[in-house]
Image (cartoon, rainbow, N blue to C red; front, side, top):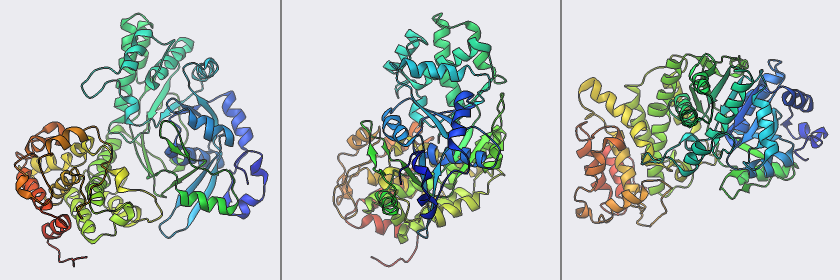
Length: 540
């Protein structure tokens, strides 16, 4: 069985329990190419299984007759090695906790364009698409880095400066490309459009809008575009930037899933690692739970998203749902568990969730957040957090790792823990009653020692602050707690890291005490968690 349009004619697909699209992929592709209404930038794993799955469902249910135009702006090997060889088809594999799977071919990814700067034909095709008055939305999963025009010091990246200076005819980055295509749309007829970030980023619509307006503003200042073009982009009745909240755990493609598909007779399921270190395959594996909440702001109309399980609401509700997830119900739990998982020697996140002490920690952090969570109304915080702890995180068939989750922790602790800390201070004047969150923060610093609880060194996950943090902690030695002489203080009192001065919030000293306990020697991490949480768990 080959994952190609011709290959789908084989009856073996359905015989082997792999569902095929309930519509003509060829006819849908023809209609989409003739009059595209949905473009997506950033066409990796979560896009194919989640966003592509939504579009498939809408077509199958007769709510749409067109698919998605897929545009890659960063890793062009994704188009060359995955999309084109498989006629833009994807094999979506949903992994359930009982070991069963749902397997189906996604057929709504109708056209794939590698937006290389030097590819004039690709750029011409994009201009044709963006100047179609019927185009309704452009969605994005380009990661948080894709929206960044400046580095941590606030300076423009070199490629961004070049984009600003040279203008719309010679763009490099994704934002400049989009702005140049919006300029084409403006010149063709000033037609409305929604630009929808679906990245897991707080206030993602605001960040996308800010980047677009800054690029367009730089061009306007240099006379590289009409002044009225900026007014067109600033008018949200014409160009809208809806906010969204997205959630679905989509790990790298799993070798075990590849082997399962191969055993069923599906050919050419090899996992590809591109030069840019994208891990991708003709299949995508992911968990079943998924959430997409979108601000209902589409000046040129939209697909019937609500018919495919998407929540449509106002901006305030999106913000509340995103805040619920990021500051209480999911992300803080990940950030509490991942560093400890690394220190305790685990390489599968589901195994971390089966650890008795880690179960105590995750429940404590969850309970502390639930006391101050803002209920968005459309989703139950309690049901959401219970699903994470009892269904999603323990799923042994999701090949996720604490090492992956621990990436860039320094960039996240201020939001994932800081919001709850500030809410406690706001309500009671102090966060002193918190136990689980200070223990989680202490665990992160203990993780930065790069020595596990058995005394063995391990490699830290990538983080832009690793060098600075490790340099500050260099004099501390695991097994000699007397070598701790306050090295954490500059970070714990730094509002840029945690969102507030943690000593003024009432938990700085507690974090130091927990950290000092955890560096006492081998086994001290587990013993500290057990003691602090007051449980009589037996030693392993």
